[in-house]
Image (cartoon, rainbow, N blue to C red):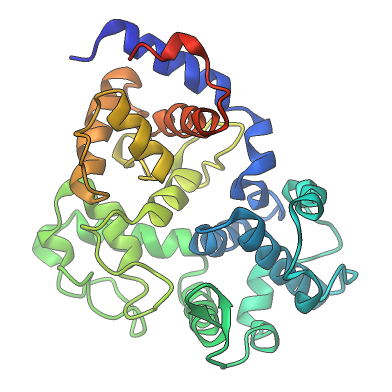
Length: 319
C-alpha cells in the first residue's frame, strides 16, 4: 500500500492541475475545436499523433492543418502552413482560442472523407514534422477516412475491435472489415487484458507509420488519446466513449511522469518507458484514484512541469 501522506498529496495535485486552464499550454486545447463528437475524436487522434517534441512547433503545425480543414468547408483562412511554421512562443500564445468550438459548418470528418487533406498533405517525402513526412500524414488521414466510411466513427471502430479483443476465442479476424486487416501485430487474443484497449486501437492502423504498432511499448500518445476519449466528468478529457471504462486506461508515460514517479518512489529509478512500467504505475495509482487511475496523470505531469520551472509546492519535496 502507498503511504497515506503521499496518496493525499497526489489527490491534492490532481485537484490543482485538472482544471480547464490546464488546456492553455497543452495539446488538449484542440479537443473542443469542433462540437461534433465524430469530428472531436478524429481531430484528437491526429493531435495526439503529433504531440511530441517542442510544443511551440507541433502546435503551429496543428493550427495550420486545422485552419486548412476549416477553410475547405467555408471557414475564413487564418494563415498558410508556410506562414506559421516558424511561430515563436509569443505567437503561439495567441492560439489559446483553438479550444473553442468552431462554427460555420466546419467538419474535420468531411475534410478527411472528401479527400480534402490531399491538398494539404501531398504525397511527398518532405518532412511535415520531425520524422513524419507529408506522405506519412496523408496515409494517416486516408486510413482515418476509411474507418469513418466503414464504421461511421473512430469510436465505433475501436469498440468493435475491443469487443473482439475481449472475445479471445474469436480473435483471428472476426468483426473486421476488409480494410481493417488482421488483429494487432501480437494478436489481440494474446495481449494482456491491460493492453487490449490500446491493442484494439493499434489494430485499426496496420503499417501506418504515424501510429505505434506494438502495444507492449510505451505508446504514450495513444494512451493519452484514450484518456481524452474515455474519462468522463473532466474539464479536460472529453469522455466520448461511454462504452469503455476509465479503470481500463493506462497512464501515458510522459518524460515528466516518469521522472516524478521515480522521484516519488512509485517506480524504479531506471524504469523504462514501456507497457510494463505503465501497468505497474497505473496499478499503484488505482489505490489513490479507485476506478480512475489515470487522473494521476494530471498530478504527476503537472508536478513535473512545475519542478522543471522551479515552481513546485515545497510540501511535496519530502517524498
